Length: 346
Image (spheres, one colour):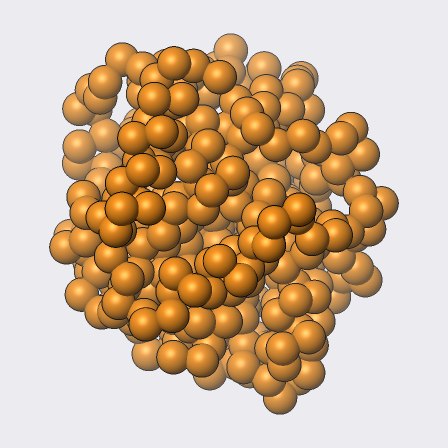
């Protein structure tokens, strides 16, 4: 682990424990304490998968998804990121279902069995597309409102859907706060140590990076898992369970487009042009929100949430999760599930 990340962990965890992080929900701190008992709860084995998968035509996609819990329960959409898969919720989904939630865990575009319905559709990974996919999915499933929850790409899709369709969103739970991209400032440099952590984003801008991802998708994914969650002791079977989802024939095209579009170096799909124009204004999140940072996140060091506070005009609590890296729902599922249930009950 770098000295920078270790120093940030100590400083920011201390700030969180001293009360710097906001807590608009009355029981937020208590819920976190209950969610992570000492000694650690049992985890699903690395052989367990969220299956069987179902399929539904939703907008431009045929989406593969897992569902658990009563069909009449409050709906929760759990969204994975890159380079993960739906099994980052292998411990979260059953916890929520046991508390009466209807839990939907879809594969994002370019992952596993999710497919584009038309061969001519641009294999876009832009943020507007990720948000539109969430709404297309709940429309297809007849869900009027749901809690949107996610990390990484999934957190971005959840944030976009919550910002642009607040009437469809009961609450938002994300890792790393406000995730809507400010593409107009994509070329503004950041601190060197932070730039270094984004090496893969720059690699994917050139054709060598595209070829590298196509040839070494598992090697790159494993490097990112290890860098982003330096304290997470995952085994080979856990990694391979997720990496199999990256064998989708559209995976490379969607990933490359996503990272080039966020730097303004690839055109978006015209189908989402109006949504992208609205996102350029960096709309506020008006629905109740809980944002989580892992105190051991190796790519986005934990914060007290103040930098993004203005982007949440509704009720919002920001929380630092001790011992978690970037993949909070898989590393600390009790904390993630507790955040979702707070939104359900609020």
